[in-house]
Structure formats: structure tokens, C-alpha cells
Image (cartoon, rainbow over all chains, first blue to last red; front, side, top):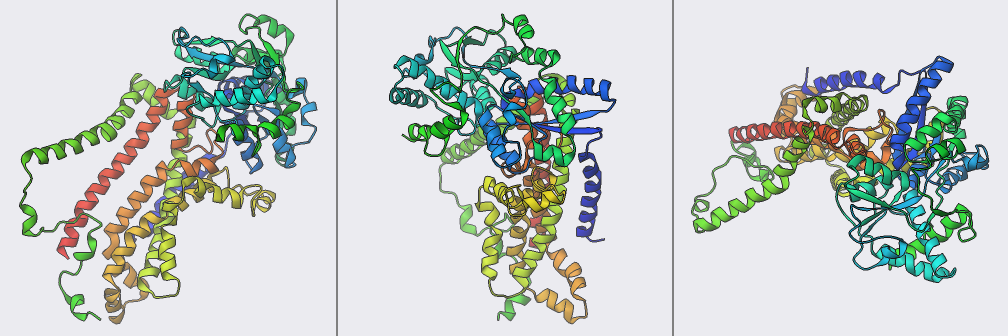
Length: 336
Length: 303
């Protein structure tokens, strides 16, 4: 036998070895395409739901996870990543998928609380003892303060960061959009590196030791403290932040093709149950359920929160167009 | 035509400068005029650079991998998601290497043994995957086979998954690693010309037999060398694969992607454990390459 045919035979043998194992052994398979910081949350949710599903339906379920910057993940679903459910950082990214006809346009009314089973907000993570004395948003524009945030173009968390800073500046300057733009521009002058997703930025700040302050999802900030120990970082809560509502929905086109609608809907509803809400709270997402919220009240600091539907922003579609679309305000301030 | 050189007993030497070969240098190169201090400074600089930028980081990968002991190291490698990533990586590498070995031979054969219009264009195109960014190499397949791409809707309607599944990863890897085999073979086969095959055919061998008995033995070391390089890159490719993978854990993550995920999940030790396995595979490849180079050198001297 020649070397080539031997090599081909070897490849074929390897192929037959590998291909069947790419298929899953579970009765039901779901793919949850999510944003960056929810990895740990959904590992636990999937386990709990899997046990419940097994007990109730008598079938095994395997829920696969994919994580990345929220905008990038939405793009992958648009390009054909077969997500049964999407659990993204903000409504606009799901709107973008809906615009391509994969999801019903009225998706956000399908589940309670704007389809956001948990909320979060944006806080500051600083190095232990807060050596730069960072207390509020205006400390971030001071010279010599290095701010770490991901890129608002690709990351949902980064867009919440940006809008929270904007809201603060508006309030400080009596509603002047011009001054708010100047403030946010100054803030981004202090950003040495823009990662594509929230987790990338967190690793840049915590593991690589770059920067004085990380603008982070509250849950991400808590997780960093948990992973690295309380003696490494402090959380600073600014005077004003934004109510981040990361929404969830099923991808109609995919579940109807795969025949997984019932399970996928059941999976998302599980997030609203007491058990699901407990898991969310344990992973530092603010629960919606009043009872669970009461139980974890001490964990989450009280802070004045503005919403995306505030007249200052006028909802995600308007905010996206004004601030983050090509040629929008972010492009203007970042290219200068 | 140079009928004389074709019959010379040592025709291989001159065109092979791209690869280190064993040959006796001309006398005057032996006479060194530099003072010893220059020589040792240069050597020390080179060694220092290698140590700082190559050996130290690589050693650190292994140090980190074993930072929590042997059990944690093994646990990281037998994790179901890690196993799936290892399996997928080996599978993708095997398919890509096989494809590119065959196609590299075909390409080199076409270019060196035949004359046709557009030949030089073809030679230029062989290098294309090296010159475009891996991100582009991935995106071209998304643009073709993605749900919004040319063939995407048809593929989805017919239940074919290309992008965000293993076929897409194979396609991207084949694209990125195509030049390795072809580039190794083309210069060598160009030098060798087709006279030996012609002789074989004149003596009554079929085309296939001439290929098996003459061409293949002549290029086998270069072919293996190309296959090794191709394999190394196929296992390690990150950029292009990242674009078409979809990052589904346990399904479409290759080893490099899995390493990044673990790192981002604060599982640094596990991340380095998988990285050390990938580095180990690379070192094995490198070792095989060195052995091959030595053989290659002595072979070309013998001819």
C-alpha cells in the first residue's frame, strides 16, 4: 500500500472514530446561545433544569452553551448558529435577530418582566483599598486613571457601561447632550484597551493587572471577588447606574424546524421559578421574584437606576441608532 | 536544452538553499576575522532571546499546567468538554492533512509537469491562504454557507449544517493549511523536471506506476515535511476556526478554542493543562521535523 492510501485509510479510521461521537446521546438537545458573563449561571441552571426535566418528563436533556460578546453572538445566530434559545445582554441584540425573521417581532411580550428573568446593573471594580480614590463616574475622567471596558460595538455590557456614564453626565449637566458627549469622550480617552466581550475585559483587569477600574456587570464584579478573593478587589457603587435587563427568548425558526418549542419554552419559564430565581441570585444576578429578592436583599446594594426606556434614551432601538450604529456618537468620540 | 546537466551525477545541490542541507562550504567561509568577544556576544544574545521569548513561556505553560498536581492535570484532560475538543481537533487535523496531501500533490504535479495558460497565476494563488488574515479565511465560508450567505438557505432547508458545525471547521482549516504541502513540493519537483518519469514511461511503465515508483519516492521526504507542518498548523489554528465554530461547548470547540474558554472561565490550571497537551503535540511535530531534516540533508547529498 502506498503512503498516501495508508494515510487516507488512517484518516478514514479516525473519521469514523470521531464523527459518531459528535452526536449527543441525550433524548433532547437544546442550544443556549448567551452572552459572556452568564457561563457559570447557565451551567447551574442547565443542571437544575436537566434534573427537573428528567424527573417530570422521564427523558434526558442536554443543553449546550455558547458564550461570547452579545452582539457577536446575535450575529452568529443570524448567520445560522442553531440556537433554540438566546439569552443575551440586551433587547436590541434580540431585535436584530427578529429583524431577520428568525424570531417573532413581539418576542419581548412573550414572557413576564420584558422577558428579562433577572436584572443587573453596572458597578466599578477597583483594586483593593481603592488607591485611586474612585467614588463615582466623574472620577473616571481624571487624568491618569485607566478605565477598562469592552467595546460597545460588540459587547452588550459595554453598551450598558456607556449609557450609564451618559446618564450620569446628563444629570450632572442639566440634560445637556453636548456635555454628556464630551464627558463620555473624556472617559474613553482613559481606556487603554477595548476587548470584544465583558469576560475579556474582566480577565484583562483581574488576571493581567491592566487598569485602575473595571466597568463591570454587577454579577461579573462579584464573581471576580469570589474567584480571586476579597483581598484583591473592592466594588464601588456609583451614585447613579442603569437597570440592565438581559432578555431571553426562543428562536422560533430553529425550534419549529427542530421540534423543540415545548422544551425550549419550558426551559425559559424555569428561569422564573423560585428555583431558577435562587440560582440567579446565587450567581449575583438581581432576581425579579419579590420573595427571592427579599432573601438576597443584603447582597445587592441599593442604587439609583435609570432604565433604557427613560426619555434620555427612548428604548434600545433609538439608543442603538443614536449611539452605537455606524457613524453614531460612539464612532465620533472614539475616532477623535 | 541542457542535456548535459541532466546526466550529471549531482544535479540537486544548487536550488535547495531554502532548506538547510549538508554541503561543504567554500574554504574562505572558514576564516573568521571577528574577535571572540563578538562571536560570544552574538551567540549569547541569540540564546538569551530564545530563552526569554520561546523557552521560558513554553516552560511556564507546563509549570502552570501542573501547578495543582497530577490529578488536577488529568482531570482537566478527561473533562467531557476537553475530550470532545481533543477529539474534534484530531479529527479536523486528520481530514485537513489528508485532503491537503492529495490536493498538494495534484497541484504540484499540475504545475511542475505540465505547461498551460494561467500556470503562474495558479502558483501565486497557492500562497493566498498565507497572505490573507485567518479572520477573512473564516468569514469567506460564513459568507458562502452562513444562513445569510449564498448557499445557506438551501443548506438549511435540506438539513445540512456547514457553518457552526464540524464541516465548516474542516473547510476553514483546509483553506488555511493548504499551502504547506504544495509549497514544499513545487520547488523540488520543478528542479527534478520530468525526465525520470519520461524514462520510466519510455521503459513501459503506466502513468500511475511512474508516479508511484518514480515521482513519489523522489519527493517523499519533502512531502512528509509538508504534511508535518500542515498538521501542526491544522491542530493549532485559532482565528479562522473561531469565526466558523459558534463556540458550542463539547461540540464545535477545538483545542485552541477550548483553551481560551477555560482561561476566560478562571480555570487557569485546566486551561494550561490543555495548552500543554497542544504544546506537547507541537513539540513532537517539531522533533519529527528535525529528524526529517537530517534525513533530507543526507539524502540529497547521496543523490
